Length: 71
Length: 263
Image (cartoon, rainbow over all chains, first blue to last red; front, top):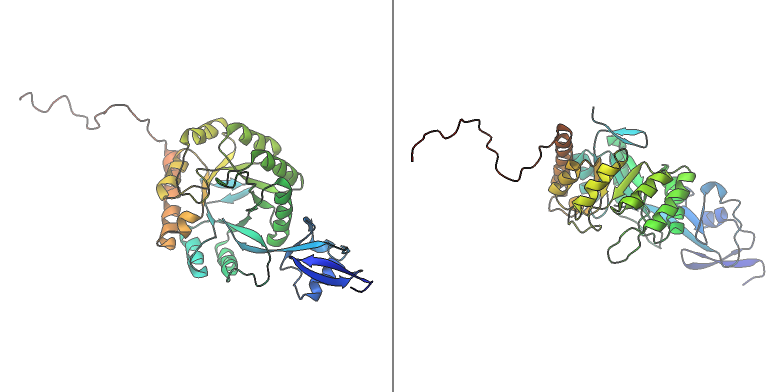
């Protein structure tokens, strides 16, 4: 791993990203439309409006949630 | 006009319908229309690679827009207040609504709600401006605590989720109605047949929420229509005042004694 990179997990998948990456940048790099998913970092909700300011850290677990049918 | 009021939203229909488990998106959409429901429940799930729901939800959303109905997202699958709070926040963002059907399960076998975690989650979410619809048991005191926390609607179970057993404890449900006259009470879970929904409405419940009974019917669209009609009819029956049961026969035809004094 390059010194300026960190490893984060997106829905369980390990990814190497620049250490200065934001959550918004991560989603953009994966072509995930900002309003199509809800996001959490390490189990805590991150609002759409807060993703740009959400600086990723080594080992972060990013989880995305989508709307589905339900009872 | 007999209007159901859910956190200030007036509704004509007293049937809330779940959207899971239907054979196709078109059947789901047709069932929503046939039921005349104005509230449908939806969910959220953790995204995995290649995930999707085969267009079910998109079909629902189009139908809902046409019907002027409302979305009630749930926190299904949560086992702690912390999980449920996070999921509720996500639901508010994704579905753009303050309504949340709060589910926090405490037992894997019965899927019984955890009253302590439920109360904790409800208190936090209400403080954040949510309008909480807690899926709870029929325990009177825990229901009272949810009302104390600011819930205007309670959704006690009739029977375990998806079991279709109907109202397992009518006494407890009747007691809730009598002791909590100002709360909006909705039987959620366990309804299997239209007669179960009718029994809930005749106890004075304000509405019923069901999913599997329609989704798993041989003809879901016809069953949706049946539930819509039964709920409306039983509500009218409750409002009309159901006669008191008698232990023995009481002749209804006003004859004078026996017709002939022979034999």
